[in-house]
Amino acid sequence: MKAKQLLKLLAALFAITLVAAACGSDTVEEVTEEAAEVVDEAMAETELTFALVAPSASDDVAFTQSMVDSLGRLGIEPQITDGTFVVEEAAAAIRGYAEDGVNVIVVHGTQYGGSLAEIAPDFPETSFIWGTATDTQGLDNVFAYYPEADQGGYVNGLIAGNLADGATIGVVGPVEAGDAVAYIEGFALGAAAAGSDTSIVYTGSFSDVALATTTAQAHVDNGVAALTGTSQSAVGAASIASANDLPWFGTQSNTEPWASDLTVASQVYHWDVVLADMIEMIEGGTLGGEAMQITLENGGLVMEFNDGFELDADLKAAADEAIAGIIAGDIATK
Image (cartoon, rainbow, N blue to C red; front, side, top):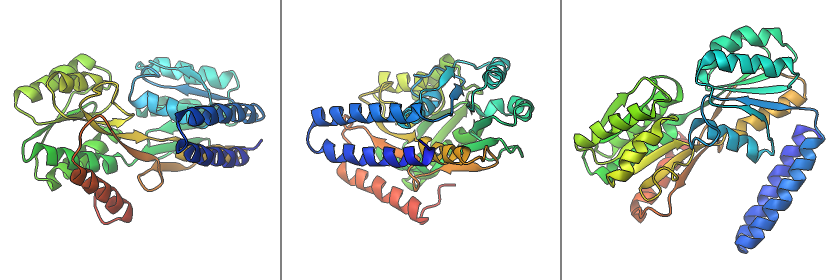
């Protein structure tokens, strides 16, 4: 079964699941199980094989999990090498999968770009999917993907600013690069629109949980009214929010597992929106050469609100209006 047929099937199954949702959780579980079986069968008929190389754990409730979940929504179970914060280790894994004949290798980390530029030309029949990045480095067998993270950042910031009621909001950033910067800048704009300032600190590390924790604690000591953060290290900041009863705002994946009672909303990356297009192109013989973005408009960015946090109905309505305004182009997020 070709990718285009598979994706149409997935869409149909998803629609059935939505209808079933109105009939009770047992029915949803039954439909989901049947859908998984059909998808597994369909994927087994394709000739494509997949691998994923990522910097942190597959269940990090952040960057890596966003990709694992996205591949899963497409019924893809790739070979995975995770926890490769060391770039040289990631490069060895990427090359190893290519040498083993894997057709599609997802290179999930901006920091791997230099290695990919050396490896990809050696394997012209292999398709590499790399992000977050806004260009393919001129390589015909590399796709790039990038989130317009400022969009969901703005929505989170708007809510946080209203909850803070003019007080400062603490932001814990990792390395000052990529989607982290986009998210944080969008968040700051949203908070400012609600009349609140942000105190932004970049730790210089995607992985140092301890440093993110101490940075968040410093924000608390300075009297912030809410906290947000991004990257795999954000679990440290979220733990401080939880310990101090402060509203927490997440991004990349749904961060409720980190601060279930205090997570207000999470911007969740649905990479499957662009992965689907890339897979269809690969099946058609185009192995790369295009960069794609996920946005609120194309459904690649999804705002998930925590039902366990009692968010004022008017504020939730304002957030929904902001989402609509961003999609319509009426609200600038950067």
